Length: 186
Image (cartoon, rainbow, N blue to C red; front, side, top):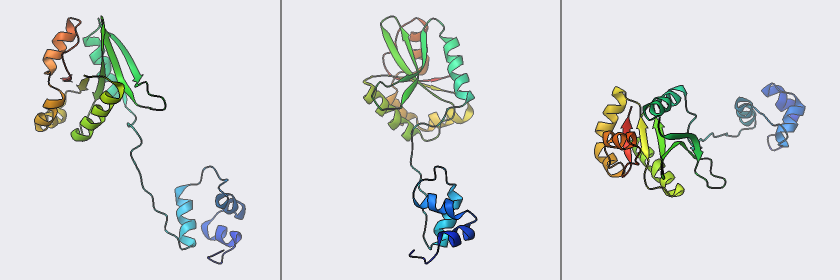
């Protein structure tokens, strides 16, 4: 009304029916393409901004599944449970795996390609805090990129992951939980 356009005229400008314009206006149209909204807004002299926000962990791929499978085959005597929720009502976060032996368990997070190490550290620290755990295994794919990234962020990671990966694997091999968090490259 403010633009002085009828639904029929607006629909013809945008390329949709007047009844669809009405459904969109009333919020009754369930799936409206973003481009249609942009065209409607433009015809009405409005800006339609689009902003995105982090919505949780990204969907994992076959490479991560393969990395976890290699880890399981490396430690076949331990129990491995995939996708273990943190156990907080309404929280959708989960550990990629929780590994356990006699009287102990430790969460495992698998990363096939390291990107933002600081963001990863923050995310893992929050998961540890919220799940009331005191240690974890960060399982990292053995690639040139990941080794370089780990080398460059070594001091930053040393505080959060004080146990060397080889030592952690030795402990796990004999059925013991590592004394602290560790980065394991596999």
